[in-house]
Image 1 (cartoon, one colour):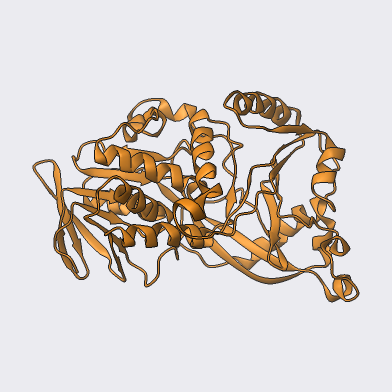
Image 2 (cartoon, rainbow, N blue to C red):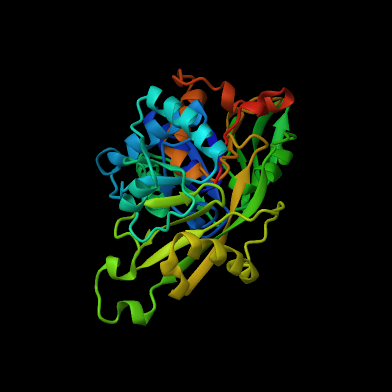
Length: 395
């Protein structure tokens, strides 16, 4: 393992890989990416639903989406790896007057930034997602360029391209300490020895707070467990049929979100992926599947997608959201320690924003203009009242 580097990146998920890739594109190739697991993208990156959307309530996040989705659309040509990206849209279902009012304001914001978003009634929502029960739906929003992508493919594309350009990727290496001297980063300690480096990037996902403490920096990120279930049609619904319409679920990969309950679903392979946030979640690193939570999800699920009533659950997993107090990420220099940079706290939106976030941080590290107002993402905002302007669409 190398003992010196210009930049050390802690964390081999989509964020760390994106930063490494974009740094090499800016001529910074003496980069070491450290991942404590044996494979990249096995943490939160590999446990998410793969959704990619423009529909956010915060202008800064919409801007991240515009850039990120643009890169995903040309990923094979620009990064060099084909990815499984399907732009069948995101459909938000709204069932309260307050949500309708909020979404009308936010659709206006999205459109002002150049995002095409359709406003639908219940009948229009049912056409987009056949099989959907629209009882109580007062309105819906639909963006056709939203979609679903493969987190592993995107992460490996970034990582391979970075490695080909000179970056070093070390797996099965755990960071155990960060050396700070005179208020500046001096390097990292790892399970396989020390690396001297004047720049360290915290891309540790839900473990960002622990990595921050090693440098004496408070990173306000807490981990929250989220479940994902995969349903298969019952034999009775598919024995004499071969199309998705026979199961009475959407044949496209449209991602549907019932905004009030946070229940969501989309097609995944031969099955249907679905999940929902828990109302009484508390911070935890436990990714054990809580099967007693499934009945709560099913009660909501069958009310919106009746076909799930007769489906079987083939498998499930749990991953971790990395959540900040205002549900906006932290991108940029850490307050108080020179050379320590943060790309954390994406609150469930990390994978989809990794292309733009990695580019922005790489520009900052390389001394370039990131062409982005970093104020909404500044680490120092938590010392003020800036948390009031965060993201309202954390699903």
